Image (cartoon, rainbow, N blue to C red):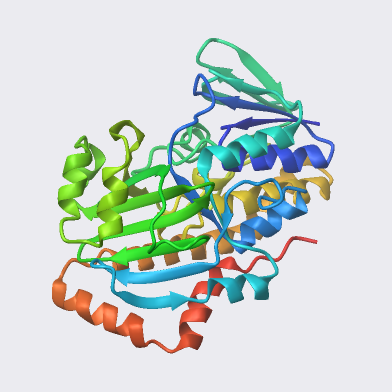
Length: 382
């Protein structure tokens, strides 16, 4: 059996690894001319590290990223609001939370593919159902054939567009800046993650190991401005005037060319992820806002589940439909929860923000724990 995977991101590479373990011949097609080495970081929660370990990929053992041991929520000025029990949650779930540079994780996944071809500069433009399988047409005129096709090509997936038809991207009226940079600070402990919640703005500062930090910042803007933001580091610094010193310091130390701006977007939840020998994983199937830090994690879960159900089915279409049915409600809940949390985080009214912070500070520990552990629970399919 042969599979074509469109997209060499985290979801596509994990899917390829999982399929290979079940004896499927895989080829990965990626539109970008070469592997991306820039970009920000990711929180790989316990659900995803559990799946990766099942694929014999251990981030900590490979020296990729830093296990998260401390997670603090603060006000914009840096006053502590809440310490989240991230260490005990990871212990209960039996798998760590690891903060990692995106490009380092992708590099590790590519090494784990061990000889599986990843074709860069292979931009897929359409696919066609064949009598026995599927064929993919690339922008350079190449046509490739396989028994199944997996769209792992992100929120603007070509595979999804052909399968589901035209549909709008939902915009949420804020921009997110992301970067990684060498950085240490007395208020960022080893293995630490600190989130700062302001009024219509947030900031995250995370240790990813090796003296490196991943940071992200958000700001409410009209959707058109968020989508087309083209300001510089000085504008970002002005946005965080009066915030905690470490927030301003890490931005000031970041080269302008290392900062990426991304608008907050997702899509309506898709009930059907494919038909026949075609399916979707990750952001192609269920793009979600970043608030839960589960975009990459849910894509990793998808890839593992897809290979599992395909291996146990009598034919390709049956296996793919079983995979979709098994993943649909889990993905739906993560998309919805990300939207709810995003609205709470990006509140702009100072009075409502004050009430939010009070509720966060004094919420019962059991409630806080339950809300944080729920997205990270993952049962491997058996």
